[in-house]
Length: 147
Image (cartoon, rainbow, N blue to C red; front, top):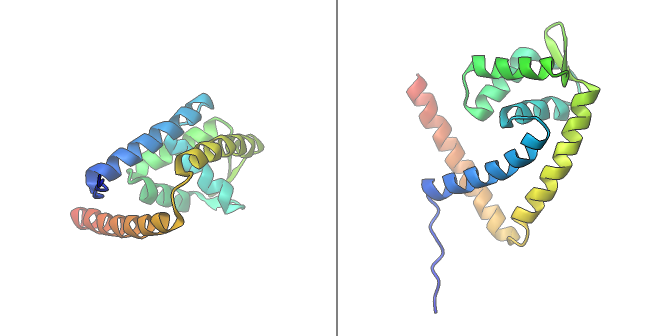
């Protein structure tokens, strides 16, 4: 019996994205975070030093494909929760934000390990190349519609 592997397309990409995101959001919700807050908090944590607020907003806008106002709102939410602190035009991660991020990252890491476990390295490399190309092309299409 021959089994034909499914061909990757927009639908399969979307299904994988939403399944993985829903799994992650189950972790995040237990900690009172939204997906957008998690992505924004992560950006500040991994920066390792204060981040210029407008640069953070631009990064979140680009990563999540949201409007600038929505990204600014997420930064404000994290400041309001005491997970980030403001310093003039910069934001930095607060101790509570660092602790929460570490806890969430540990849980999400375990979840991710279970999801990705057993996938051959060559399949992951090929998938990575395809996803990078799809992202590049989709970003170009989005930019063209906004021009």
